[in-house]
Length: 437
Image (cartoon, rainbow, N blue to C red; front, side, top):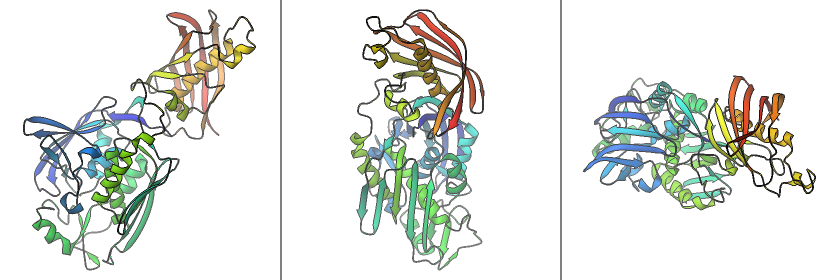
């Protein structure tokens, strides 16, 4: 599974009151370039401070486990988990979060719903570059008393949570979700934060929950909801716990592939678990970091394309504009298996393999148009106007430039041109379609 870097289509702003501080706040979500990550931009003692949403900036044991806070250069932002969950859950990897007031604002409810509406209003833009991701390769666990969080390998990104409260209106709840934008928007984002009535006064004495009220948070009192509140889901509490966990996992700084299981955890435990994962970052599946963070390395190509030796014929993608164009490279060496018979003593790359390599480059463009390329293949359905203008021999570097001519559902037509240096060596119109394996 491969994640692509995404940002917002435009800036959007929201005003409201901080859940814990009760301070008026203004938050603006802004588009950001590739490799920016999620970054808070807040006033500091000496001017504007940028605080990356990374676990190294998380405040340890903060606010009695009621919120996650970040701090850098004398600037601090608290209760970051809901906005981070919304961005993470909607697939946004690059965003500048301008914030005045020290805490993201809440309006109708302390959940992720309004933040998702902000993302939907701005629109999500695919930036055409793979996101460095954390692929879980072995089981890991963090434990403290009855609190436990673990992660195991999985094909996608799944969260499971178990809670057990004495208040019978909450009781024992379990839930598991595969985290995808549609699932997050409908099943997780609307779930509101909650508290027990007996804890509310204590929170307020601690200087917390100043902006909370029965209109924006669930309050349970001896087996029933306070006031005239109505649950949005029978298991709304555990869904909100999943929302919190997702926001805290965003502090890893990259998408995660694996199945996370949490039992009775809160923000402190979540953050400590993320610290453990971050410390093991060297175990990422990349043997080496991409030399060019603006392109696709071979590891990323192999995640989206099913081809393998000796038939994987594209080495790098140096540019990709989703739905429009792609440029890829193939380094031709004497070690290519086909040179053994084509031709002994006079090695020439077969013209049909030049077209195949061109088509594989186009396949990256086509498969990147679907949210999840697992179980997908690209089939040729036609080749028109193929022309070969000069031989390709060992030592050449082929550069393939393809433009999307027509894209309709799973079918497309692309025009491709192959170059060695600035010399055109081949061109063709390629028709392809995506099929399920």
